[in-house]
Image (cartoon, rainbow, N blue to C red):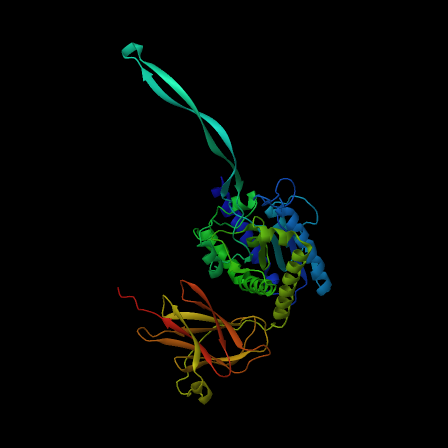
Length: 452
């Protein structure tokens, strides 16, 4: 049944995304939706189950943090309209949450959760007991043969069994973006413990639809990426940065291979914050404490302030794509030649034609850059913003093709940082570079021409 229904759900979500283009083209952030994950007796979410846990319920933790987040947002940004999906212990279907957010005209969706994972069983000896056992001898032969028991007593250990706490801890931020995976989190997952971002039953059922393996899913993923991905990614990165400043373990920005309904069906940039692991003792105490909840609320608020400042300072329209034609007649400037390349990244691409979108990475702080391709100027003293400046490149097969970032200034927050989103017709890559007035940064493209 689900397989037949999913394309319809996808079409509805895609239609919503297409008709609400004003949300994506916003020039001023006015409305934020805060969602407390889970709720009600039907959906308590994850619970503390390890030995000596607080037995806390995720629905209560998320509501407490969400209420503090709403209060902090209103306190620090009173000009904003902050709307909750719930303020009491009630159940809401994920589709209902998305509908509420869309109908309230949200321009940003902040979903608060707490994570968990499968617990292993441990045992310990708690005492001993006496147990009667038997040895046997036999007398007689044939039909007269008899089995004679000889009882004896032994002391055996008595064990009790308990759930071990999770070793994994920290805060992670999730977005709906098919290309994005946190290397830091993946390294933790590779350590052995099973992991899947927790969702309620309805959300999990909807997520049986794999957005990478169907034409409808790929179409929706592309629509979402075009409209909201960059902004969701940017906000999520800010949240991860602010969490890290608190001293907590920040696990990075990540996504599942399958969608998260409250992220993919909301017509706005959206993130889901897994505030901590409810079955890790340290995390459970932290996310249940007034101090921990307030600290998380303040970190997310700081990230939203950075995000708001960036989008409202970047109201210039996106540049129209233009083919970058190397200016062979123009010599490379003396300053460019005199600076060594401090940072060089290698990118393997599948085509000799690549598209580059150039953004400021982090806060928009007045960074200006020039870009050289194979020592030819292709972008001259361009101001970086949250809107992409687009240009195309043609690679030369068999040759080292190098794109160099040259800092024309340092902006107000050194060094000069740029995000380059590169597509080769098949794959999409994100490369972050940092340059200053002493060193350049570069990307070296590796392309091998395919022979028939």
